[in-house]
Image (cartoon, rainbow, N blue to C red; front, side):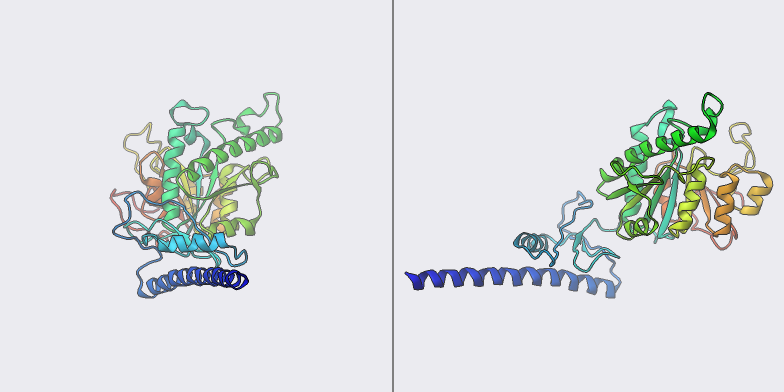
Length: 362
């Protein structure tokens, strides 16, 4: 009886060792396949022809040897045994992580790898003019998620004008600084709403605020924000710069410079920058590209002067486009020609032609 007990114990131990070896082999095999795809130029993501049509958004199965438990190994083995749909290791992640993600869709290669998207509070209000239009937020979040899943690192700054605009309440029983702080709180509400909408599309998202409110968001730390972007997360910045007398446009320009964004994309209610007000002048012409000097000389309402100067000093182009046109946000995030591009050199930041002939740079 004692001999049988020892034999059964040895068999169980050997079985566990064999299962562990198979799990480690499965993970190594997945990584080997990924290295082969990269060397052949096939791309980071791969999809099986027999995979279901519904994309697997943001699902992750992680095998980490630091925890080494039976559960993580079994999970890795189960993931490797499934149909090979979009198995990849995210760029910038630890070698211990095996991620399962949606493959990149067809389309032109992206121009930008890290961008700053500025969305005004008025745009989030939709036609109601106040509060949050959830349909508008869902549409913006869907296109942001699409670009993020395509490999673009997306940071977002949201305004708060749909709830409270500090500058317009100055002198109505409030000093300017107090009114601006109230406006910053409004941007945090919009940021939390946008976070929930983006995460509903399967993309992990972090909200970072300029002042501490740890119960609802992370405090802004530059290196942590960059790390979130490198991990494929969308980062939404709330509370502007954290200082009164500065607009959220300036906050977007400042954060773009801090995280080394390649471009600031300003989503507005018009198609771009015109030589006159298009609502009053039906013959107004849309500029395709402008220089910072021209914007300042003509007093064009692209962004406030502080934000434009900050972008000029850091050589960050600004793209102004209409967010109400479906697909515009995703197209702009990929670097396609949308709206008006403001830069130091119109030739340097020339973008791919798309469809609408526009007025040349000035």
